[in-house]
Amino acid sequence: MINRRVYKLVFVVLVAALCNLSCKIQEERKVDEEAGPMNFIVIFADDLGYGDLGCYGNPSIKTPNLDRLAQEGQKWTNFYVAANVCSPSRASLLTGRLPIRNGVYSNIRRVFFPDSETGLPQKEITIAELLKTKQYNTACIGKWHLGHNDGYLPTDQGFDYFYGLPYSNDMDRVAGIGHGNASLNPKVEYFNVPLMKNKEIIERPADQYTITKRYTEESVKFIKENTDKPFFLYLAHSMPHVPLFASQDFQDKSKRGLYGDVVEEIDWSVGRIIKTLKETGLDENTLVIFTSDNGPWAIMNDHGGSAGMLYGAKGTSYEGGVREPAIFWSPKLVKPEVVSKMGSTMDLMPTFMHLADIELPKDREYDGFNITPVLKGEDENPRNEHFYYHGTILFAARKGDYKKYYYKNNPMGYPERMEKLDTPELYNVQLDPSERFDIAKEFPEIMVVIDEMVNTHRATIVKPESELDKFPKKIQN
Image (tube, rainbow, N blue to C red; front, side, top):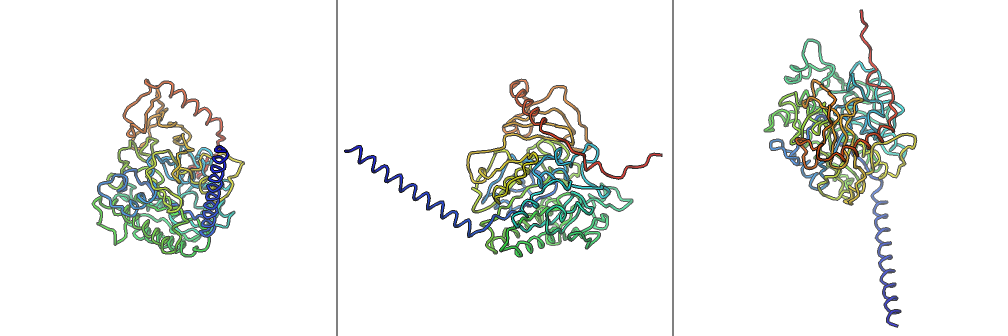
């Protein structure tokens, strides 16, 4: 009799719990339906170092808006880009695929130039193109650098709107002025780089003093025009890549000089974006990500940034060249915390598609993972590996906390001095992020495990033709 009563009580409690759970799920679904589809904003800096933000330890540059974003959201400390220079890094963010797969790789030319013939291959599928299948409005505002000729501009790659520079802000340099002098003592007239609106050049040379402000104004306008439509905004700042320019409101304001002025203006820009989201009521269903394309351009002296405690810089596959500050913010989705798990810009594609309920195409290999569980604060972490490519060369590979080096390079990045190591090296980059202590002899079994991982990875690579190598060749006499 007692057992029967106990069973009945347990049954009643279970039914009540299930009912409560069902009601909670229905309420969450109702809130999701009312909020609408998730919007996505990627704010991408250029040549920003791991140590260039206040929340990542910079003692001189004030970044209150990004610091607040990191506190309210997630600050990732092991977040990677797919390449140590611009074009291949951007191609991988937008496609979720390594440069060696998407065709934006080269050992000759590392990025696209004004004489490049092509760009990101048209057969590649971008985040913007996939989101368009769910009626998202899409905009690329800022630096593109994935092809400037017809057929390769943002409006050819899934973006409804483009406002920005087609390539780096130090290109189209006028004849007779050396790159070093023009970059360290910059004037707008030294760089004949065009400002474009969709496929039309609207200003040349672009007034780079006001470019960050104008990118911000265009972004705010785009957000306000899409309060009742799902959207994807890719805001790719042209700086702090040299030459450095800051608007009048930010000149001579930072204790870090002109470089700090530029970063502080980008921080202001982030603040304007977040303010607009809150004013329009879009903050609850918008995911904002802030990161950069590669590490700091260290050879530019105080016009370049800092990798903080990390070794190496732009142009290298040491941690300082490819590990970037990364902040994820979405009041409803993201659980505030510091994340020391591994992540990558290539994870954005599958994560966005999961949140937008879009299936990834099955006809190609992807190198990204859906990191939604990590954003929600769950223990699961789908990424446990990272491959450090330098053009076609696999410089290093990381599995868990351990990174194995097959090559070495000039830690400043330039000039490139790629040399194969006679004896590969091993570092625990969680315990030793500065890569000071080679522990290969202590952990031979880990060396073997990483080699096996690399062999498995290489078996999946089908290398397409290099797009970066397509440019007019000089005629030899």
